[in-house]
Image (cartoon, rainbow, N blue to C red; front, side, top):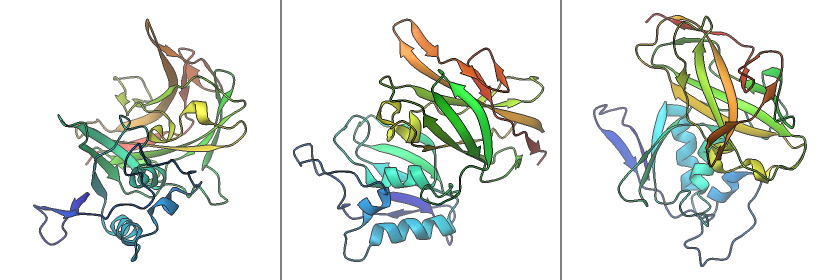
Length: 266
């Protein structure tokens, strides 16, 4: 189920109920099928291609959408085709858990992410390497480098592992003032591709797109900001950060992206 703002009655959301997605498994008893490289393929199959048409229309008309999902990480057998597609082509802003574990609310910004199947790479290259084997080849800021407090900052990271890695890890990122004058704003900590491409599944030498987004606080002061990116693993004694090397780092574990962006006064 999707919820988007009704253009004609702005005080009320418009709720859209989607059909069962042919690419989904009805239960863990259904035999698993190979996943296609293109997740939108999982949305095809209903007579009128309703779901892909709805998602395409919303992306053209709406700034964001809420997805009401009944599967999640607690149902590892589930394919979750709509989540896979939205998390690859757009940006997950937040998740809201409810007392019922089969009801999850996910807010997506419908900013268009870089085409993962196109011939273009990231806008900006970096030399950051984590743990000596996880390269941040580059990144894209699809909305540019000028923002106002309250805007969504979307970030697409372009990773590549030099070898197969058995241990999973989480990506954390922050928006920090360039002059260190105040604490950074933290984004969501997630496995790559919102958990659909955990580190342990990466093939050596194959790039992986990883989308992130956060909404700037409404009271964020104007100024110049940078983005910090780090990886960490949970250990019995707490989180353990992966070491990073590159042109600009701090504390041995934080990679600093070379782009500065500006937050303007409203």
